[in-house]
Amino acid sequence: MNRVLVYLLLSGAAIVLQTAFLPHFLPYGFKPDLLLILVIYLGLHERTWRGATLVYALGWAYDVFAGSFPGLHGFVLLGIFLAVRATVSRVNAESSLLLMGLVLLGSLMQAVLTIFALEFFVEGSDFWPMIFWPLPLQVVLNVLAAFILLRAALWGQLRFMPRRRVPGLHKLDSRHGT
Image (tube, rainbow, N blue to C red; front, side, top):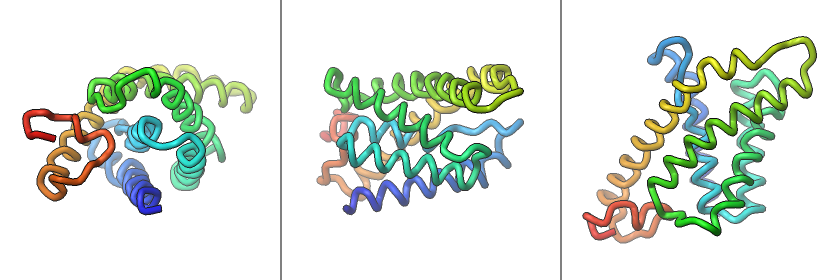
């Protein structure tokens, strides 16, 4: 239960950061998708039912604050979570390079699922250019944000919780004996 509370707090902070603060600092409304990074982390380290329920709820919460179409982010983030869960048994979930690759692929999958859902359910609009034009920069921002968040999480773990095992961080940097 404590992990779920931590995930809810992190997702709340991510939603506030990417909807209220980051658009003011980055040009043209570009911002890293912090919720996507959290969803990929959840896909690597949470069980399917608990994680899927949490991710779907987070998607709906994101739609409440920043969405135009109710349920769109719930559908998209759940699809990404399930794709990550399908691959997690075949890969080393402790690899930081894997997380970066999954953020890259998750960003692409997010664009494809968003286009699919909008084209399927909304008539009379062409969403392809609005989503594909900023996609390269969005992928770069997401991967850069994931790298910065991993480094910050590692620093925080080494500084404040050196003996505590945090999923995804205990093999992240072998120089520090973690």
